[in-house]
Length: 397
Image (cartoon, rainbow, N blue to C red; front, side, top):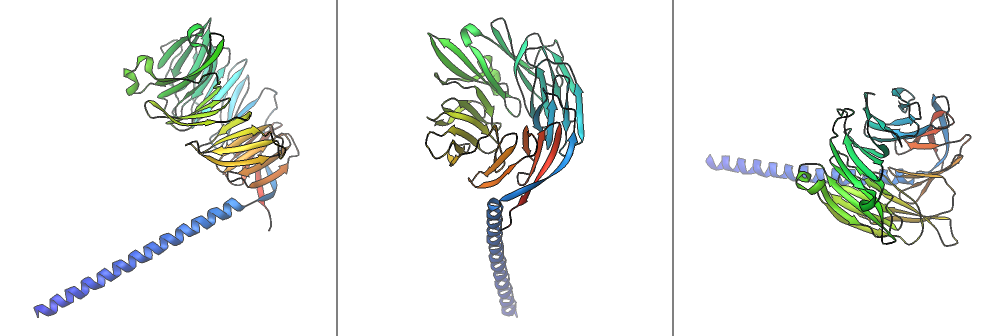
């Protein structure tokens, strides 16, 4: 009897073992099929081309010559001397703010925006609901940048000195900033740009100074987190760029820094202390450098006879992903998702990040700005006091 029970137990164990193997094989097969499906779907998506478009009007407003625009959330921020308004992609007003500025400049990150009077002494920090913190400073504002959680970096100048100060939604005019620093034109040079990290705890500045009749460019990294408290003036690193100018700097992610130069670009990793990540040197004349959440696009003046421009795409490790020739004239360029969009007021051409021409078309009215909506086939067109949604129509094979 005992032998029969042991035999039945062994049979049951064998049966369960076979079931497990079958389930494992089926799971593996399912994962392989799913991966194949994803690859096929991605290939089909990348291969799509579009031959026309249709427009739907989303918003209209009184046109002013000094109105500027920035992408904000899924819509846009429009601002001028009298105020700012955030508009959703459906044309609804999310919030509006009034002020009086002679030369307004703005920056957005996440749901926060900062608007400042360049050359003046006031700026506004605005959150996603329209709550506004208006701050007056003592010196003239030159550059601004804002982090995703609302910490704003403001650079100011006055009588041979420059100041960098950090503010938040809780800061009050006339009170001490969250952090501050001071430089001298004689010893440190003239500021070119600044950028703050996504979490608002790291900052970079670019300065140009004259040393013995030659120009030097220095990029300085600051750490205002816990680690930075033990550093002199919170300076985590200071790098000489030589005679190459670095007029643009940016945190691509919270830890990856882009330094744009007139002879290429540099990438740094900065979790706490900056470390060189990649150096890309370019001999041709650089016309544009733009970036997205995943790539850096460099447009060069082509010196050969087969096109006007050379378009190169790099990943955040500095590895070249694309190098194509382009013969179209354009005024603006943007990089978003898998789109490289070149456009002028009356025309547009869109390439994929793989170099395939996705769309080419003309507009019936002036277009000042184009903003991708779904990174596939929908775009906001801004111009002539209107906002339209452009839906691309797929080409018929």
